[in-house]
Structures are given as C-alpha cells and as structure tokens.
Image (cartoon, rainbow, N blue to C red; front, side, top):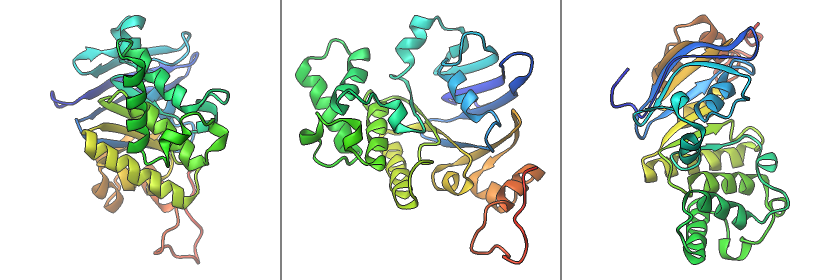
Length: 271
C-alpha cells in the first residue's frame, strides 16, 4: 500500500459470533480520492464503515489494522477516537429521518456537531458556521429555516442537512453509506452532484458505499467489489466497468439493465 494514503485498511476481519461478516479485506484511500465500495446487501459494506468509525457493538470481534493519518484507529482509546469521530472522519447515513432527531430544530442539530468539537466558539461563531454549512449544501433560505424541524423538509433537503452536519467541522474523510437509496432519480442526481462539488472544494476523501453500480460510477475514482465479506476485485472506475475480471463483478454489472441490454434475454442473477 502507498505510504501517502490517508486511510489504509489492512487484513480487516469483523465477526459477529463464530462466522466473520468481513474476512481479511484490505484497501486504501488517498487524499481527495473517492473509493466506491459496492456489493449486494449482506456483503459486509456497512460493517466495514462502522468498523472504521468504531461504532460496532462491543461484543463484535474486530482484528486487523485501520490506519488513518498515521494512527491505528483500532488501537486508540475511546476518548481519543471520540475526538476524531465527527471532526476528522464523518459519516452520512442512509435514512435521514432516523439519523436526525425529529424533535430538535435542524439548526440546533448542526450546531451541536460544532460544539462537540469546538467548545471554545461563541454562540455567534457557531451560528455562522451552521449557516455557512447550510449555504454550502444549497439549502434554501437557511437563515429563515434554522428553527424548522426535519419533517418540514423534503427527503432531498433532509439529506442535504445530514451532509451539512457531516461537513461542518471540515473532516478529512467522509463515509457515505447508501446516501441516495431513499431518493428519487432526479434528487439522487442532485445529491451526487453536490457531493462531487464539495469533495473538490474541500479536497475531501470519500468512501462511498452502495449496491448500485450506476450511482458508484458517478462519484468514484476507484471501485472495490465486495462479496460475502471479501473484496473480490479492485480497479479504477473506468477499467472495472469496461473490463471486469471477477465473475461476481461481471454478474453484478450484467444484472443491471442499460440502454444496450438485450431485452430478449433475462438479466443475470447473483445466486
């Protein structure tokens, strides 16, 4: 692995009981790069992201090494990890209505993320950061809507609020776990465009997790394909789509219809 990589995952194994959900995977992520982690449900994608953030249940057995910025995250104490979680590494979850507090105004929720890592800031400075972050994700009239609640926003706007909350502390690594699954195609395209723009603006590294290869192709520089807890193939995005090497990757690509798909033949299955 390259020594200048921001994130290096080496021989990571995650077990919930006797059987590993993730079995000895390794990958790396450079500064300003997006890695798409793709695979069907149950392949171990989300477990991998939660292991990086140290958010798995205490009973989970996690071995290997997760190096970030010169530190092994698995070896840090919980207070040391808490200082990095949300400040240096942030996450966008799949469903905004479960990730957001329904009885707390959105401005207060973003402000809480700022105060957790910057207690020295004044009330005015925190408010300025919140508004700046809401403007960056193109939320309409943020000054007027600071005191609105999550249910008063559309699905796409709630996802923008989660992105604003994740990026308000200027993390170096953003983990996006299926961030567009619950959105319609038009809003999905807007969110992907927003993530690409913010990544370039802040030189942000991103681990983008999805089961949808079409979505991954719009944001990723490289793609890692997971099957049953293993990474079966890694390649630059264009190369993987043009010439997939592993049989599972080939079936995964063939299972999604495109404009060139022969409609007289059934789609490939992942059985």
